[in-house]
Image 1 (cartoon, rainbow, N blue to C red):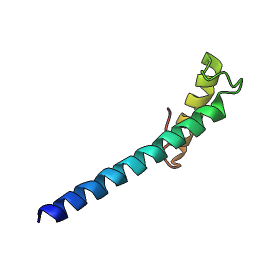
Image 2 (image 1 turned 90 degrees about the horizontal axis):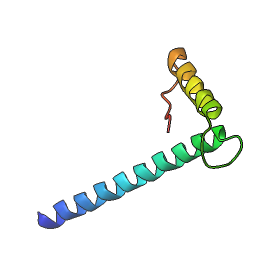
Image 3 (image 1 turned 135 degrees about the horizontal axis):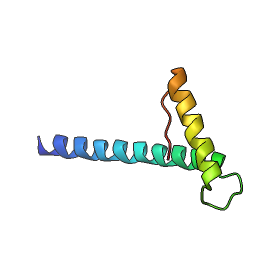
Image 4 (image 1 turned 60 degrees about the horizontal axis):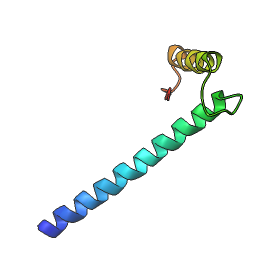
Length: 68
């Protein structure tokens, strides 16, 4: 039983790590899409564009989006 439990915990740990990597990649892609000057930071105008896009998607009933 201990080996089964350890294997399950290891599998769940790996699944959580994989999911976190997917989330991090999606956030980085979304950030890059709105960082129009490529300086690694969002200006007020860039952040406004990100926010408006996220709210437009949310209000239209499309899939949920990740802000950052």
